Amino acid sequence: MLTLGNLSPQEGSTKQRKRLGRGPGSGHGKTAGRGHKGFKSRSGSGIKPGFEGGQMPLQRRLPKRGFTNIFKKEFSLVALSQLDKFEAGVVVSPAELVEAGMVKKGTLIKILANGEITKAVTVKVDKISSQAKAQIEAAGGTVVLTEVTAAE
Image 1: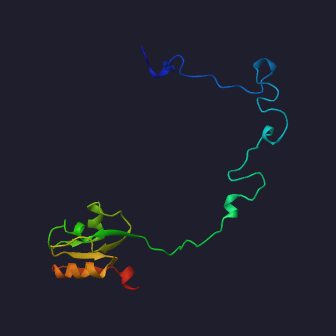
Image 2: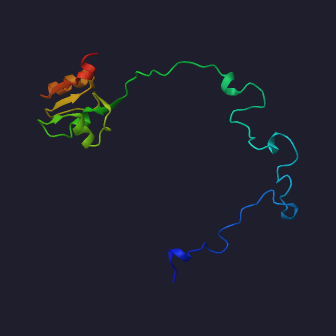
Image 3: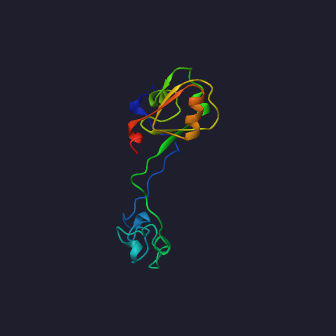
């Protein structure tokens, strides 16, 4: 009977590893397939990625430009057409948008005026375009900006 204790690989599916430096009879003794002397025969050798033999590497030859702004705020974008999927009179907060799968949890949210909205909804978001705000208010809804961006 086959049990976990007597499992073995299928015949021919595994190879024995090449045992280097184990005497002349092995065929891989003495220099162990590394050739004679030189940098590549030593232990710990190996050319680092990007090394070009002493020539100035490409990474250093090319000019560097710009920087990464550590204060940049990434917004998840939501279109008005997506908000139209909610029922009329509902308060659409970040939690509802996450639940609906429109944004990821913990991200800042911005509403854009892509598409149209026909239902009156209250929207609580971090940022909104002026056109989107006008369309929501025209449909009878309201817009509440969170305190994070209201102070800016």
